[in-house]
Length: 133
Image (cartoon, rainbow, N blue to C red; front, side, top):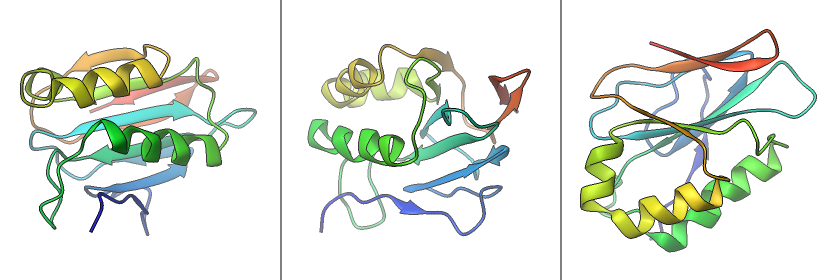
């Protein structure tokens, strides 16, 4: 079974391998996870994608899975100049460097916030993405 991304039932509880869109989004707790966030073009909404290195089925996020992330973003009409990556970036750089580097390149070299484990989210403030924690 391939690494998959599903729409979250609640954009205020985006779990691993889920994405959501709303004026404000919140991820479930990060434990070595990454979050990708971006503004939806022409709206006061943000999209958030919760990535885990190894999903519940044992599938490891790899370079081939980057297209799934960019596909979700494109389908939600994201503004590729507003991307942010948050979370355990150092862990991903060390343990999955090829996939991490491919993701960063595909996201138009986003702003990267290195956070540890925790609960994070994003909202739109003054028309721009604001990371919340």
